Length: 82
Picture (cartoon, rainbow, N blue to C red):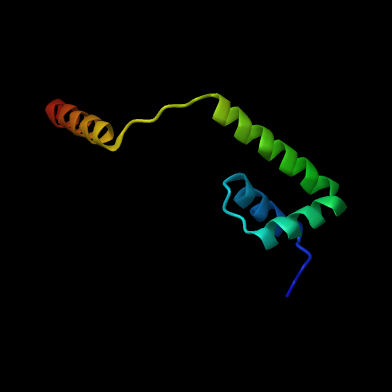
């Protein structure tokens, strides 16, 4: 089993950690890599800051039925314009 991550693998695991999809072993390997790699520490810090900023923005999205209604209205407008 490979215990040390390459930087591109570490970035992928970092992203998984942000979305709480990483397992214990992934987190452990990530932390070992971060101890040794300054560039990935910076990436991880920026990634965390971005996630917190997006979460703090309190963005709202449309519910699926609202999206479908909007799609139908847009299609009707397109068809009426022809």
